[in-house]
Image 1 (tube, helix red, strand yellow):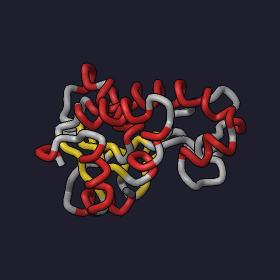
Image 2 (tube, one colour):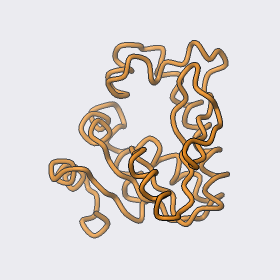
Image 3 (cartoon, rainbow, N blue to C red):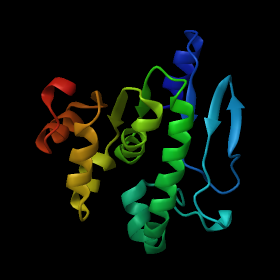
Image 4 (spheres, helix red, strand yellow):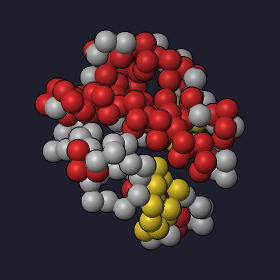
Length: 167
C-alpha cells in the first residue's frame, strides 16, 4: 500500500492514508508528502492489540481474544477519520474489507466512490468468522470497484458473491 501511495504522490496526486494505530506510532504525521492518520482505538495505548505480533487480523484475534472488543472502537475511529479526510478526496481506496466497511459506512459524510483492494485474510479468513461472509459480501457489494492482488483472490471474491462487473 505504501508503494502505491508514494507512486501516486510522485505523479502529482495528493494522497492521505488512514492506517491502523500501533503503540508508539504518531497519530498524525506527514511522511514523504503523504498525510498519515492513525486513529487511536484503545484508551491505554500500550493495550492496543490489533497490530500486535503481525500475521494479520484473524491470527491476532485467535491469539489475543481481548482484541475482539477493540474492533468496535477501531472501526469507529476509522469511520471518523475516513469521513473527515474523504471529503477532500476524489476516491476512497481501502486496502482490506474492515477499512472498506468503514469507508462504505461513512460515505454519507464523504460522498465519494469507494474502492476496496482485498489482500488475503480478509477474503480467505474473515468469511469463516461468525457473520464474516455476510459482512464481506455487504461491504464489497457496496463498493464501486473491488480490486484483488491475485487471480485466487478474484476467484474467492466471486465465490462470496461480488459482482464480476465491479472486479
